[in-house]
Image (cartoon, rainbow, N blue to C red; front, side, top):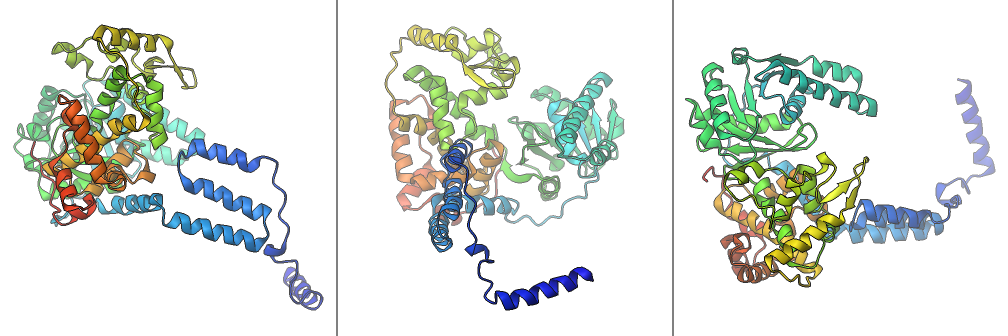
Length: 529
């Protein structure tokens, strides 16, 4: 009461002494001087952190104007810059991604209600299975983890607990929340313990024979209506479904690593996946905080299929042109990718697929630089050496011996490196990505172009500010993309990824961007191969 009385007296006093409140409005107060060089320092920091994005730079301009100009002039600067950004291509791209994320869950013609998922089983206890399991446990669902031996289960749980310990130390999770999540886990080596689960996700390594064996066992013990899902990243969903008596309950649920962090979930529709199964997978994805996207059943689905030739063409240019691998990576990061193709290869591991190529006789350390790296034990970041060397704090350092090997390989292949422009490097990295997106739509493996944008933004960190690959292709202009692809296809007839998609040709003939052209012929995702 005393405080209120004093406040009233103060207000009465000021009403007499300063009735216009002069000097007390924030707009009339002098702004404290900023430290010397502050704004230049912030511009430099944002240029590195948010490459080629105009909004962070304009925000700094606004704050600088507020500190150095009269209030009215500062407002004029803010208004001018705001409206410039409001109509920019970056604003349109960000708006496109925002609405695309929310639109991906809407499947044309899907009316079935999802099953109520209370208990989930994970087959496997490796890094991927553990990451997937964490998503469900944190949402209060019971999780059963199954593996062949108890030691594998114990190791998997130790990794999960270590992840949670780091989260508690960072302050991103409370100990109480972690304890509750861990209480959701149970471990088993027996398929008999899966009789009452509502959803099973198989997450073992990519071996079709093994996966078929697992699906046969699941088919024998799981209750009717249990959803049988696989986390495969490229194998056929239909081939697994065929070994069960319930192919309508089988679907792909492709998480991205690390699965407890990455926000994308590709739900892969099989030829016989029922509407209930599809609806359940989509609902589960939203429930565990992912952006679920329905895709068709083809090799690599959408994300991995789209980006497969990104690395292939980077390696081709490394031999063909007079560019180093770090220079090629720099073109990708300038465009907004968090990592270039060579740094990304080091991160994911250079030995992926090597055993299969050794079996089929295509592993060739003499003329393939990446195979030589693997032979030398330079497997990527996990060995602190790949295309780059890596310090203890994971900083990349170019290695002269690797570039020397590139030069030796050029000589063995009889290649004289030629000059390439930055534009050519950009086009050869990204135009095949665009083109593959058109082919995916053409084949019926995605519902709409916007879904592909969501998949690449959240599965491969394609720059959000670009709107995703299909939106970016429209922004660049489809006639220009088509013309470049035709030129590269003529020069490289053996590279099928340069051959323009018929859908791209049709869009250019119709003089329409893809988004507009596709809206007139939208169709459900197919499961055909």
